[in-house]
Image 1 (cartoon, one colour):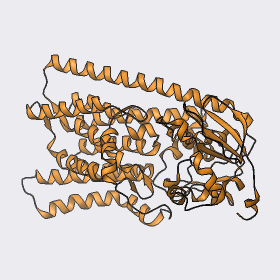
Image 2: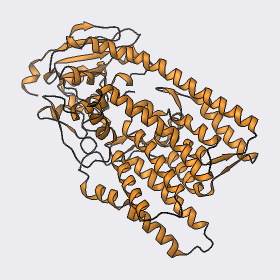
Image 3: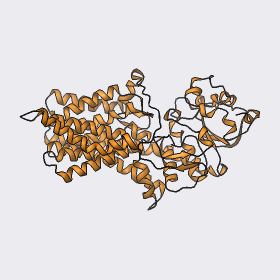
Image 4: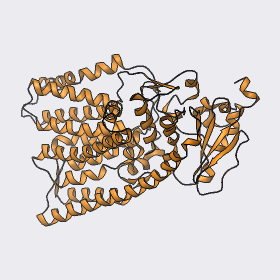
Length: 483
């Protein structure tokens, strides 16, 4: 999970961890699931165990939520609800989008409860749903938007099935929904702090393949093409042979989700990866809304195959996480070589890494925020999205947006050190805060791969070499008096 160490650092700071560089500024942000749950839980156990519990509950929600939706729609648990669990391990989970994954799982349960109570919602129920919607909003804004869309379409579909479809009946349904969402809407309009990038970027052609790849993954950056394609073909074959029916009240919502999955932007409201957040939701809800007509024999075979698939998913992910964990452990074992309260810069040796995924190491230095009181520019501190803040003057040398949330490559260091902002479009768009970095950072962690190492810039001086990274001291130069 690339984002795991950064979340861990935020949880540490929120839980009262000491730092010379960061402070916590609580605000009514719609992105607080982990921030509100993990630090208090960590007081009962420890930080890493609390985080693992949070992620385990997230998995449970993605498994149980679709099954509960199916039961609410058809009055029983079925094969579709079992298959839906295949989408639990998706791209957003693998990246470590903690709050979104948790909030989406929670929204599955809220949607199931909404469907199950259709026609018998009293004031107490409605008050409970309003509170639940508000909780989902504070857990994550995008999950709240998807939940609002699904509940809205369910009400419209229910109205279309009424014998007497009048405009007043539809207005009452929509007005009730608006009233339930009023608290969350008011929080967003009135109390959400300013900040973040309001631009939207679609990049549809460049990201179309990623939308399919994001649905199911066995490990980070390893799409399960065969499994995803098999489930899609199975669904289509069941529709053609009339061995499956989709709940009529979910049809509109699934069609809207499909359209949003195809046309969702890559960037929106300062957040990246919007385009691969919906495919797993679409797949999970489509199967949860489907009633398969299978004989007992084929149902037994299907459930056994699904359980075997889940076991393989868990096994592959376990081995992959153990591999990354071993590297994280190697870094943590070497942290005593990092000076206390050092200002750390992570750098990627792209030529050495080659085609290997470098994202799992983007935030590795954030372990030193916890263990060495260090500063790194990639702790999650984006204004308007996170409650951790960088204290002046280092706030000028930290990533200010999600677009700036990746480390520079080693071949960009000379241009950054010289202040050549126009030398590379990445420097202008992603790393402007790293200009004259040698004046503001003490040490650099260079991540290497299996290929030949690149030439080291003259401002870096080797302190320690490990199997996949090296620690360098950063020397100041004459430009620092003017930076």
